[in-house]
Image (cartoon, rainbow, N blue to C red; front, side, top):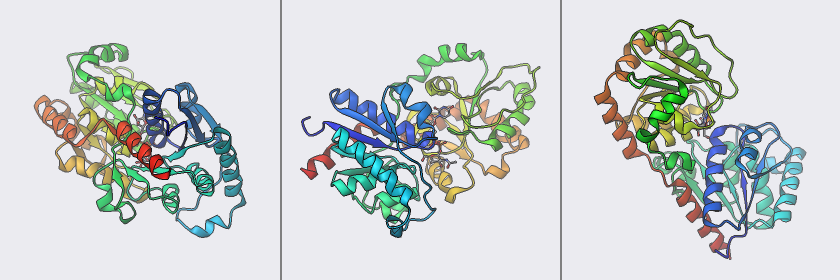
Length: 370
Ligand SMILES: CC(=O)N[C@H]1[C@@H](OP(=O)(O)OP(=O)(O)OC[C@H]2O[C@@H](n3ccc(=O)[nH]c3=O)[C@H](O)[C@@H]2O)O[C@H](CO)[C@@H](O)[C@@H]1O
């Protein structure tokens, strides 16, 4: 496609912004191998751990702190933001960007500002309600807004005209056949094929409440014959699990190959970050969602439609105790029939083509600008 020679992808902070960016980069590369792909990140975000190993050019621009609300006076105030925007602009000029695609996180703002000043098309991909502060700022400069979930335009006024494209997911996930990979996954984690597996994840940074509650329920889970595969999260403290359990309880600090976790899982217990929900539903993994109780209840909004569709269960952070796990998670993990129905309901809500749909939207935005 002659329209596209160079794309700049901006997004950073946590995995929730970076994995969709990487999945989208892969889609661009797959369709247009000759297109130059540049990513913009901040100095301390997880992008520094995730993007270079994926083989993409990561340019780091100076960090600055955004306030919690969107205020256009910002454009007149912080020098540091303009310094970042200047740095982003130099990169846009150097790579002759045809479009900037932003996934949110503070680093997106200077990219949006620099693109706006150059009249370079901007596309925003947003997965949360309410939209993140960085993307809300970006929306002052473009109408090209894509969202991950069909409920978002109904729930947020600022997203009412957005295109629903789904969430770009890694091809290791979109191409995953869980049943086929299961034996290898179980073997790799040292889990038994004859007992159910509870897969625990607090999102990319991990969740202390989840880690401590599940670890405290370790004995009850093990004595009920439920194995646990527990990812602690990239930036979370280690926790203790009793050593002498009768069935496996495997703890991993961070799992880069999430397809193995999803393949091993009979049931997931997790935070309902938007990308996690996009993944569990795309893959038909039944889940107990424990929304992060802060940041505007956004995670509750992510999980609710899946739960309403029958694809999972919702529990408040405060209610997630070892007793709750014993009374609710253990019976569910052992009920193969109920899990099968839940998995099918989750899969009906999910989709696997978010990368392709976002690429189509970006190409339209570039074409419109010609
Ligand atoms: C506390 C908080 O503010 N969380 C936000 C953050 O969550 P967070 O950054 O945790 O993002 P998500 O839950 O949406 O996605 C986590 C991603 O990390 C991956 N993963 C996780 C653990 C692991 O060991 N390996 C691994 O690869 C998952 O497969 C998934 O792709 O961004 C999301 C998307 O903007 C928001 O919806 C969340 O509300």
